[in-house]
Image 1 (cartoon, one colour):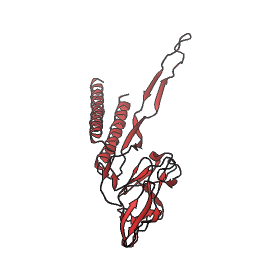
Image 2: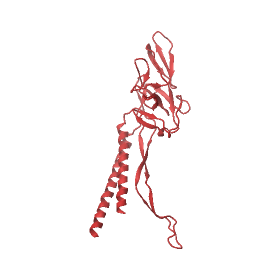
Image 3: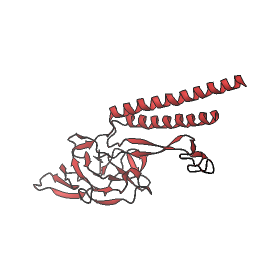
Image 4: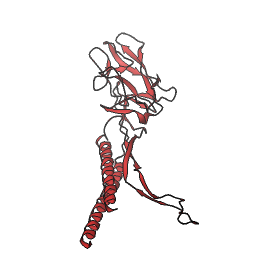
Length: 262
C-alpha cells in the first residue's frame, strides 16, 4: 500500500513539474507578439477497484459507495487560450494586427503554409511583403519601388500611393484564415502554427467576413499573458509540488517504522 502511495506521489511531482514548464513558457513569451498563453489540463490515472459500488456486502445488504483507489495524475494536454491581446500602436505601415478571430498566412521554407497572429511584416528589396523570418505573406503582396505610402484597409485591401500619382492604386488583398478549433493548431515555433487533425480545415477569406476579424494597420497584438495570473499559478504549482514531496517523505517514514517493528 505504501509503495503505491510513493508511486501516486511521484506522478504528482511529474505533473506539477510539467505544469511549471508550461507557466515558465508563458512568462518567457510575455513580450512575444501575438503569443497565446497555454493552460495545463490534468486528468486522473486508472483506478484500482477493490469493491464495486452496489456489490453485495451480505445476502441482504449492498455497498453504497464501494472502494476505488487512484493511481495518480498526469497532464492530459495543454489548451491554448485564444483571448485577444492588447493592441500596441507602432505607426509602421506594415505592422498589422487582427482584431477578432483569424490568422495571417505565410509560406514556410518547406512549401507548406504557416499561420500566425504576429503581423510584424516588412518589405524586401524586390518589394515582397515578408515576416520577420523572411517568409512571404500569402497571398503574395508586392509593393512597387516608387510607392511613397501604403494603406491597408480593415478588409485587407492594400493600396499604394506612388510619386506623381494623385490617386492610390490597389496592389493586392491580404486574406486571413479561421479554424473551427484554433486551440487544436500545432505550435511549430517561430510564432507559427500549422493545421492539424484537431483544428479542422483552414477557412480562407476576406478579413471581417464569416467570423474573421478585421485588420488594424500600424498596430501589433501583444501577448495575452497576464503576469499576475501566471505568478499566482506558479505559487499554487510550487505548493502542490511541496505537498507531493511531503507525501513521499511521510510514506518513507511509515516504511521505516514498519521495518523497525517487524
